[in-house]
Each structure stands twice: as C-alpha cells, then as structure tokens.
Image (tube, rainbow, N blue to C red; front, side):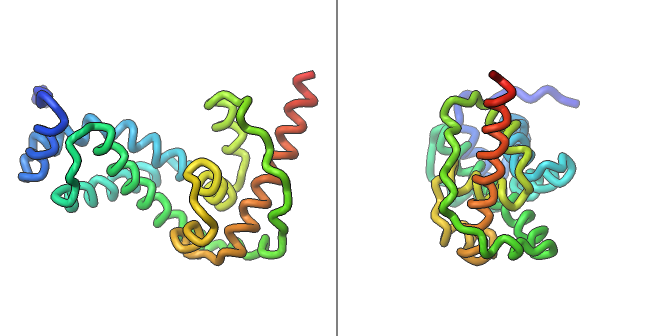
Length: 186
C-alpha cells in the first residue's frame, strides 16, 4: 500500500475531494473514519452494523461534498458527523419499525432528570449503555443533542408520545441505576 502524503490544509483537501480526486478522498476517509466510526458505534452498538453505517455515510459525504461550503476542519467534521448520525438514525429507525416501542406509550414524562453533571465521560457512556437502544437514542437526542420531541419523532419515524415515553423510561432507568451506584459507592 502506498503511503499517502497529507495535504497541507483542510481547505485544500476539501477542494480536491470536491473535484473527485481519489487521493484526496482516501485522505479524507483515513483522517475522519476513526472518529466517524466511533460516533456510529455510539449509536449502533453492533460494530459491524456501525461500520456499515459509516460506509454509507462516507458514500453520502462523497456524493454531496459539493454542497459543503466551509473551509475549516471543525466545520467539515461537524457536517460529516451529522451525515453519519443521520445514517445511524436511519438504521435504528428501520430496526425500531420491526420492534415497535409503543409499549411505553402510556408512561409519563414527569420523572425527574437524574444529575449527570458529576459523571466523567466514561461513566456517562457506561450508564447510557445500560439503556435499551430506543431509549438510549431518544435520551441522547433529547439531552445531549438538544432536540425537541417533535424533531426526534420525525427523525426516528415514531410518534411524539413514543419519544416522550422513551425519554421517561430512560430517565427512570438512569435514576434507578444512579441511585444504586450512589448507594454502592458509600
């Protein structure tokens, strides 16, 4: 395999990718694939499905790179991350369509939000991993991505009520588990 000589800056790389330069496409992939795979694996716990989602995201990235108008690496990564997250959500939406989550429709959203501010990133990841997939996705979109229930419902192809009940269920699980961890830590 040939060694790739990195392009001088992100703007040069973006412009070369927009011109369908294969070397630039490979460099873009090698530069961002690990981070995007990590994002996909966060949403989709099965590593092979996460890799598939990342691959589909890169296809969309290469097909729509002409639409990207930024020049900074941070803006490029944000744009690419959004595409990858949407790819993951599409996968999860299709998976959730098969496994309806309406059984939580009647739960109330009145459960208090557990305090997550004292947790390290690794502790937060471990706690969120105990949530069922649907609850975790709704919780992440609502709390960490700051989306509204109607946006989540539209993105995942579920009802607003299901989004609310999934969030309530996630809060309840987190509250219970955080209480247990607090008790065990003492």
